Structures are given as C-alpha cells and as structure tokens.
Length: 484
Image (tube, rainbow, N blue to C red):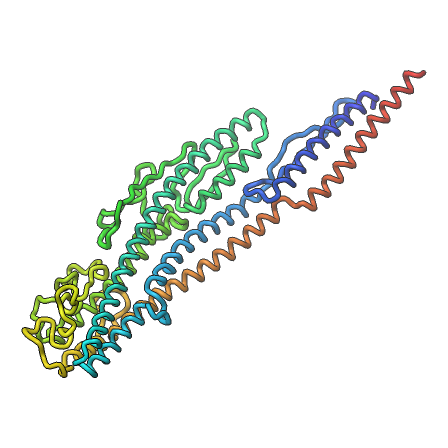
C-alpha cells in the first residue's frame, strides 16, 4: 500500500469515526424521547487496487416493529377500558354506595323509616312532613341520576367529535410524512427523524382507533383497522361525525336521532366487537353513548316506574281513582307504560302533599284526594303506604331479573348490577395497564442503551486514535523522504 493510499484509508476512517460519534451523541441525547429509533451506522469496506478504507453505507433506524405493534394494541385497549370504567365510576358517584348516607339506597330506607314513624303518631304533622321530605329526596336522587346519565352521554358525544377531529389531523400528518420519507429515500437523504415523527403520530392515533400498520418498499406505510377499514393507503381517509346539541333519553343512534360515524362518507357500525373501529377510545365513547348509558337509563327507569306503580294503586289510597296520579307521578300525570323511557328524569312528588304547591302534608295521612280532613289518629293509609313500599313484586322492565323483591330490594339489585360492571371494568383497566406497562418497559429496553452507547464511544475513540496515528506516521515518512 502506498503512503497516499494509507492516508486516504485513514481519512475515511476518521470521517466514519466522526459520523459514529455524531450518531452515538444523538442516541444518548434522545434516550427518553418518545418514538425515537436507535441510530446505527452501517459501514462497508472500500478496496480499489492497493487502496482501501471504509465508507458509510447507510444510517439505519433500529426498532422492533412487532413489539411496537403489540404496545400500540395495548394502548388502544387501555384507552377503551378506561373510558368505559370512567362512566361507571361517575354513575356510582351520583347514586352513591350503600354506606353513603346520601345514596339512593339510604334515601329509600329513610323514607320507609319515616312512614313507620308517622304511622306510630299520625297526628304529628312534623312526622308527616318528614315523610314527605324523604319521599322528595328519592325523587331528586332519581332525577339527578337520570340527568347525570344524559350528561355523560353528551360528554361522550363531545369526546367523539374531538377524537374524529384529532384522528383526521393525525391522518393528514401521516400522509404528509409518508410523502416526505419517500422523497428523502429517493434522494438518498436520511429519513430517520421523519420516521420518528411518524411513530409519535401513530402512537397518538392508536389511542383513538386501533391500527394495523403495513410497511411499503418505498418507505411509506399503509394503515388499516384490525377489521380492515382503510385509514391511510396513499391518501388519508376522512372521518366525519355530526354531534347533537343536546341528548335526551329517547334519542339513540338506532332511531336515527343521534349521528353515526362515517369514513369517507360511508356509515360505520360502532355497536359491537365487529365494528371497524372496535377496541379504541372512539369506539368506547360510542359504547357509552349508545350502550352503557342507555342501559343505565333503562334500569333507573325500571326503578322509577316500579316506585310510581306501587303508590298509584287504588288499593293503597282509596281516594285515588283510575287515571289519577299517586304519591309519585310522571311529572304530575299518571304513569303510562308506553312512555317509560326517561321516567326517572320526570318522576315527581304529588303536589297534593307539598304546601309550596298548594298541598298539605296531612294528605299523606288522609288521602291525596280526600274531600276533607280525616281523623288525626287514623294511621291506616300510612300503613298502606309502608306496606306498598315493602310489597314484593317483579320489575316490569329493565334487565335486573324477574325476581320478586320489595322496593329496597330492587334498588339494591340495581346498585349491585352497576357495581359488578364497574368492578369488571376496573379489573380490565388494571390488566390493560399492567400489560401496557410491561410492553412499554420492553420497548424501552430495546431502545437506547446508554451503557452500550458509551462502550461504542470508547471503541470509536480507539479507532479514531489509530487512524490519526496512521496519518501521523505517514506524515513522518513523507518528511523523511523529503529530507533524503
């Protein structure tokens, strides 16, 4: 090898070492950066006659695509289960737990106790007043619960719109990044930084909709949902959704009063596990709006209906005639089973026992529609009301089962029904979070290893010193030749 060849080889080595130091420093600086892929230089030897050296063949971005895909699926599952669990947590906060003195269960128990107390001393108006106030608290609890369920549906509707807007923005960003990466590859320019950006956007999108990502030979990617709906294949898909200004109990997607999701103008089913978007936060919010909240409203309506019908019976209060509302009513009118949806939000206490509405507490003892005052010591009607509350029957609607129970038993059954669903979803959240955390940890272990990078830096330093020494030796040889 000639001296000039030796110098050329050493210079190529110095250049390669310099680029390796740059890659190592970039790796160390981004060891905690989301979406960052470890940079590594691929070197190849140069040999032409007696000359040699190395050159940089490529700068690779090392990532485990299979691991990232698993972690993204875990992100989607966690976002989905968290959304559903949050709904039941909010519902439980509204209804209260059995030990909560302001829970629906506790209020019903207090109402029953107040009726028993009034039966013992029917002439005392304060006891009648207490029973009326306790009855009104049950009405308010059911009204508040119904309103809260509809508010949670409205919140889900708002989040759906936000997710659709964000998903469209992410898809447009991915389309742009695809084009930039393809262009960089065609020009032979490193595209690792663009691929990092694309990975971050994919992570954001996968919380909304679960993804299947396919790598193309030209450096671009195509994106589909697990059930095959295309989101990006050359051009980004367009998601559309028209939120309602207000949501009432009778409004559902099934009856056309709430909007569907559309992809490129085509309606998309969102109701089951076969939905093209099943598994992410977007589908979970549709599940809250069209499934969980609708079911919760149905159970509340079943309880409210049962309560109204118990006291609307003419056998309980002989002063009631068929068609008249009882102690509890549908906004002041008699309850009609064909108009059950939303009754928990409309149930009200009879004006006949409310002084502020022109009524009198004593009508609880004498009869709602009694022509005149009854005997102050007659507790018959109060005893009838107490008996009506504890009378066992089966709910006429809802899906809490056909078991016959008293009013308190039905409310306890509903609370248990909601509690079981919340517990199940909490367990799902715990599993999803644990699974996701494990995958994130594995992904980080595959990322930048600072110890390995520092070891590589020592080796690069040695290679740099060796090449520098070779150039120094070649220089000394040239100096010696010039002195001859």
